[in-house]
Image: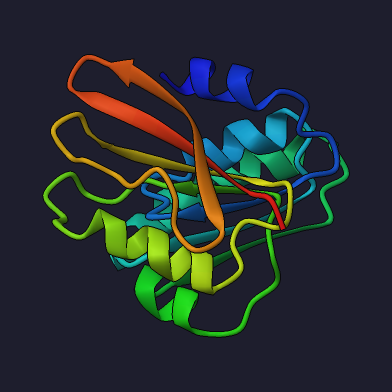
Length: 157
């Protein structure tokens, strides 16, 4: 699924990447290995901090000339309610048990995520129904992988 997602995203050289519910940080690591230069990882579980930082050392050590990679341990919803820069690619991978994935889309939209022309990817169980649009986001692709799906949105303005 990860390979397919990044193939769909295409060239990430110079892009900024926002990883919400970062888990181990593997998606950010993949984005960086494909040319993203700036990344922000958000994870609420403090126990994952060590593994995320260890994984990010791999990116730092490959000589790729990263501009900035930061990790914040805090709730995703709090980050989206605050002011922040806009990112070219936003990856949202909430726990499957989280019931309000539509609410995350609305929060991301209100936060101006992703940047105009950027892509937001939401990983969700296949039984969840997501909207085709929010105020400023438009669904343009859905990829199915067993019981999970990736919903691809773009911001046209």
